Image (cartoon, rainbow, N blue to C red; front, side, top):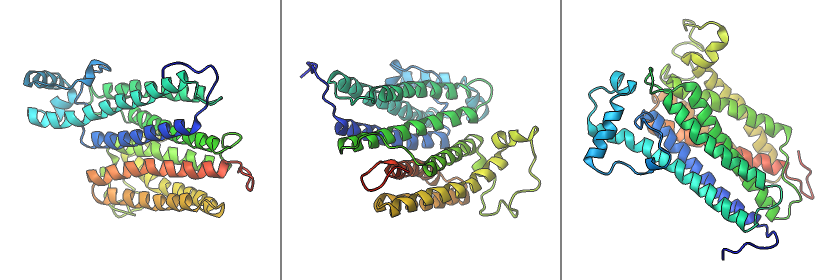
Length: 348
């Protein structure tokens, strides 16, 4: 069972199934990350302990020790002063689950990868890709702590820029895993080489990631609370009295009103490009995937509007973040199908 074969025995279908499972775990991580952010739980664990941190507080003394560490942070002093131990346990729970799930994803990726390597089951050309994904996963853990550390010094909030880096890398890893799984499935079906995304697909994915960037800024700056009306912001398309920062480009990063405005309307450019991809996929004969992509676009637009109108109600806002990941997966599936070389339809 543990002997290593003398000759390579590629198993692209099995590896694709494993990667799909990891992608599901990352999707759950995105959901839990959204809950952690919206409940302001991310600063409850003030130490980074990659190994020992897997064990939660087990006794009342352990809980009190964790609470004492938290009471030394700016968030406790300026935001949650007077919080009870019971309330602390609630916010600690979400951050603990978030970190635990991150460790689980690391193991769920690293151990099967080692097994497939030992069994010489990784197809030629995919070893470096899978190794690169493993490296990105490790980097993501370090960036997660880098993000948390920004809120433990002076300001009781994590840096919205570091939050954006953390979220975008998570979605990049998620998307890369989905794409690689699709390539391996195609290889198992007899495809000669990996898919090449058409120009339209590249543009759609790039603009979608730009929208993710502004979405992260909205979350980090709590810009979703700035205006809770739609389509107008208050009584205006853009509030004329908005205080502007200098130099002006800073407003695209640090001004909550400008960031919310861009996020609102960039969504429709994303929608137009994604729907175009969906229609192309439908015409190519990929009707189920094309229809799902178009449905995901409209679902995400609706959730975005409801998030604003609800005053960033947690369940709606979390659904909005989760649908963003599903929209990314749906777009990647359609772009991949458009980029596959088949006997009856060339790539692009």
